[in-house]
Image 1 (cartoon, rainbow, N blue to C red):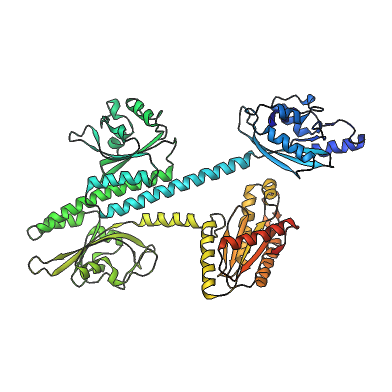
Image 2: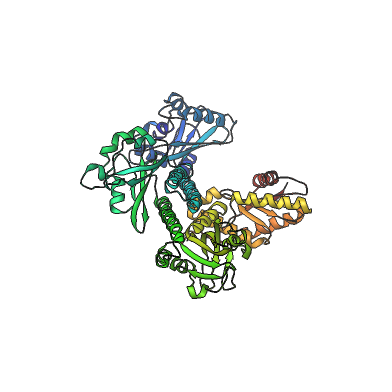
Length: 640
């Protein structure tokens, strides 16, 4: 209904006795200078005047421009079909309230889609001279798309977090598993419960090598696998789907639309039964040979973007490494039984296994290391032999970056306890390398069969540096605002609450500032969102330059910032806020080549407390002061 009325416009005219002809001409010119569609209603809701933009909007949307003046806008709203024009009745009530002086203004957002594009507008109603109402329709399509894109980016980030959790959880299982079938089942479960998939299964070729059969599965829709026929051959329809193609061509296959991509006809009815929209099939390799497939399914179309595919490929690669590790452990056990009889067989295994292996004697002195260990650690055998795990030539650190003491090294722990030490994550710092190598290590002590004394210990480890890097990257995304590089809302609240707890424990006054950029929406509307982002970044930099290292600055909303000032009296906090306000006011911010530099102001609320409280409560007090600053003129500091 809002659009139906909006589409009835005409060239700017004024009807009635609003003013004399000169005043009418002045009003018409002023209204035409407004870029947005504008109309004026009298107290009864009759359209008195419309501007040029209203007429053009009407003509573009099939309206009758010459019939607008004199029509009753409120009657059109009342008669509108709620299904075709949702919100029209609410708009009519609001306009009447504005005309009666019960509302100072009213905003109403609505969709107005044309045959060629989707559009959104905001109807804004303002009182005029106590007996008229002015209605302005502002195009908010770009803002709507921006918010939709931000929502989609957030959804993707959450999906990536889920998938990273799946990879991390799988890595822990992979590092300790000795049963390949059990490992397959666990990875399927993790892909569903942590990775957000509906169903996952692992396939391997049957003894003939011509059919792929399920070895493990988990999730909703495992009945899909009952009687399922998938061939490894390309000359039959059952072999030209995503699974057969992935196995045969040794590559990942992503099916973003299960009903239209690949040759899905043999399984079409099964897929429709479970409402799957997307699938991904990832080869599990041993020595570059496909030994299994990990297949996952989603009920969402286009569910797999490049980062998600990368994480799932990492999961499949880790599964292949686990298969290598399980096979290596099996072979190693057999080699230990015949070690004294066949040194050559042991040496072959030792030198070709994909994991790094280091042998140390009962005192912890390194005896030998395989080529994989040299490659992963960036150290030659000559650099390692004759030294211990805690030699000054290299260092070991924990996950949090603190030094790993020598007695906590997995090999030394195994020697001290006489028991295997499994699943230790540690970083190896090599002075000859710029980066830290992260490994997942398992150490096993070996006893003399006759005397039962410990003879040596061997440590097997995988390079998990890429996993650690991904985890650190996601952790940064979860704690820091990407635009300003200051703590985000989540981290700010955590740090703020910690500081309040410290203040309660040791005494002293803690102050909080709430800061909001004045007229920020107008900045976005006038100069665009790129300039808006530049303003937010500039304000953050000004704040950081005005604060101490111990102060905590965070971005807690679109244009809102908050600051925790430890051990700061209220009066001093007010001075800090005033210093920030003046610094922002004096800062010139680039707004593009056309607009040059712009200046902005901020309003700040100050609150402080000496007693036990929460960061939420303290921010509420500061927010109330900020509200006072906003509503008493802006560009000022108010205290709670």
